[in-house]
Image (cartoon, rainbow, N blue to C red):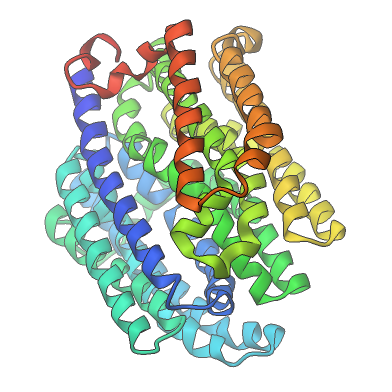
Length: 482
């Protein structure tokens, strides 16, 4: 695959991703003023279960359509039919969860919420294969366009429902509407159709690849959602609303930056699955750029946590400022791990991914339990941060040393200056800027902190020459850097 293809794919996905992020920020700025933290907490509880089911339907079959170049259109149609039936089963199981969840949380609203969201589970499951086929065929423009359209329409619907008193149902119908739009568009564009009979031989042939990913994603779900589950059970839906808001905000920059490239990594890098050296070179260049961006984003979010929360969401979300500040410390490791699954897939080493996830899940679960025992969402946030740093070192060791056979010390030599800069700047913000600017006007304090971070970052890039790592995003210079 030519470099130009990667560059074009990344650019297309970036435009789509940034458009969606801007829409999402605007949507949240509006909806956060229409819904209460308690109403957000109800949806956050349900989101735990939708995320679990998404790990099931997103695992394996979509990735195998991209990875296995020998699959014919007939084979892919057979997998699509299988996924449609799986979607019906998953939707029924999801709807049935409403009653027990209502009993656990002593609130009958969950019964109908789960029934409505079951439609979203079906359409998301059925749409996995058509969407994967479009990515396999490198039709990124069409996927990106309909992704933006889906978010725009579904966000608009949610805001209208919230204005008319729809409460958490506004968020529920946003999820369902987006799933329907993405399914209909991908099915229409891909031309993949249902078959009368499922080819069991095809299904069996893809199971080895699929099962490792399913297992990895199940453990990954536990790792990423145990904090929400335990916070909701021990501290209530309101505290969960605050914690969920801060955690979601932490993910914004990751989705906006590394998320613009990672969705196209597997479709593009799967072409290098037989050339391990070339695959690692491209992965290292991608990671170097991600690291350089991540140190600025993490520093800014940590030092300007109060201003970001109050400007975006208003004073009713003050209680999530400190948890957001602590969670922003783990933005760097989350950036560094954001594209790793695509690399494991391209290497055909899902067994290594499974091994890494087992270790990471154990670390994260123990850390979250410790945070819950300490009794506050701020403690949970700090423990989650420590776990993510540990997980980054484990994941990158397994991928680079065991997957690529690269010296782990030589690998980290590329990134040590970035970590030093991150530590120094965040320390300056914590022990200097915050106390000095606390009494300033909110907007002036935000501008002052952004200016300090921007100047420090620019000086670092110039002194170390690391600005060259960012040149891949400039169309005219990308040819020489990717």
